[in-house]
Amino acid sequence: MRIVHISDTHLGFGAFSKLDPEEGINQREADMYNAFKQVIDETIQIKPDIVVHSGDLFDTARPQNRAITFALNQMLRLSEAKIETVLISGNHSTPRIRETGSIFSIFEHLTHMHPVHDPGIARIVIGDVTVTAIPHSASPPLSQVVSTARPSFDTGKNVLVIHAGLLGAGDYRMDEFNEQLVPIESLHEGFDYVAMGHFHKFEKVREGVYYSGSTERLGFGEAGQKKGFAEVDLDSGKVKFHEVRTREMLDLERIDASRLSSSEILEASRDRISSADIEHKIVRLAIKDVTAESYRSLDLQSIRRLGGAALHFELKIDRAESEEQRALGTAQIGSLTMEFQRYVASLDIPEQKKRRLLEIGPPYIAEAEE
Image (tube, rainbow, N blue to C red; front, top):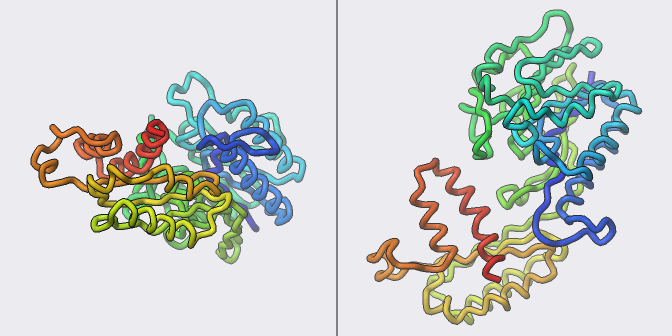
């Protein structure tokens, strides 16, 4: 008995300003579609008994028509191949107000398709397998629901599908404001396989408990990660990861500019960028501890032009504070990026959330300054 485990496809996600030359849509949106189509192509070739999608099929609870149409077409392919498919909604694709309804209802008319979006536990029996599906839920909290989930004695095999971060087994969270966290101890050990969604890296948590990861990269925290899906043999317990072709994301080695002049920073940037193949890739270069004197004469536009072959080139500049600035504290107004960093540092929120804000905020500031 084989299953294919897919998760976090985030259809409809878009970023940067580049357009796909063939489709005329946002390039990153097209990349998400391309990765998911590869997954469906391979899944149909594998011909598993069951497909489980463990959440965040869409990037938002109200996806645009293009994303809906694409998802329907891919689900229709699985339906026509007579592959039983279980879909649960994740935190990105679950509306905050239940009364607004779920986009997952569009799949209910397809044969062999089992969308699950209402809070609580749903059990789908497929042959000799019971799939216990638990979609994202804030009320009741997911930890409360999961703690009551038990395998069925009516079938030979049991699969649990959840979209959540895990506590007590490493750092399996995305630090999103509406994510749900579940203690690993609440996962009943009687399940033959637990298909986790939400964490974007393929990862074995413990025996029989896996995150399949996202099918494309959504941020530089995922640079270098392989993307794809998992194939699971329920009889042997063997789990095989299938990698799909995705757009490469490069986080170049950071430059320490504390002792560099502006011309030396430019030369170091040229060396970093020229030593990497950046064409059509998503690239970030971070330069730390740039002195005020070097920053004033630093040719930022020239550095950005060095990254022109990339699909997207992100330049992250961290300026060093002088003794005078440190003495003045927040009374000294620095660059927009510096002031944003100071503001985030002052927030009374977990450190993980601060790191996430500091990762996603500066690129928008740099784009505005440009």
